[in-house]
Image 1: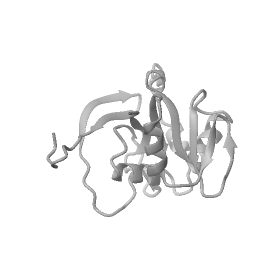
Image 2: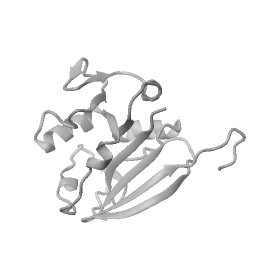
Image 3: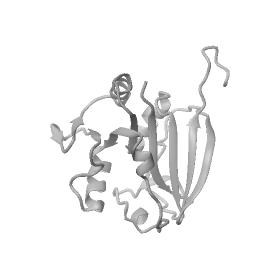
Length: 183
């Protein structure tokens, strides 16, 4: 069964973007010149995100074609049809991810946004998280983990790295046995 990863950056106070979906603060954060995401990207063949994340990533990268050679699933309440190497989807992220996990292929990368990440996390559908933390306080914005009813999810710390001005934590979800205790 395919694994599902979240790989993305947040502000020091936990926001994915400003309230107006601006990510410029992240693009203004210095990275290590030798930073290379290709090893991560080689592990995935499908990218999942919301329409706002898709559009803002296109805008900031200056490219219509983002995440080349990866199938793109873009959740949208307003858009329909095809995009370059993918489709707009209206529906339940849980059902879509469960369907994708059952198909043959490499891992699935959830890019954002917070509503999708929170929903998938709540349903134990994110196996690993790579979260880069920028030394920027936004004060308000769109959170990585949206407020929801109380839910306890435990992760194991795999690694902590420095990527220029970003701190990156890599976490794996701790599986529970059928009887309930953490193993």
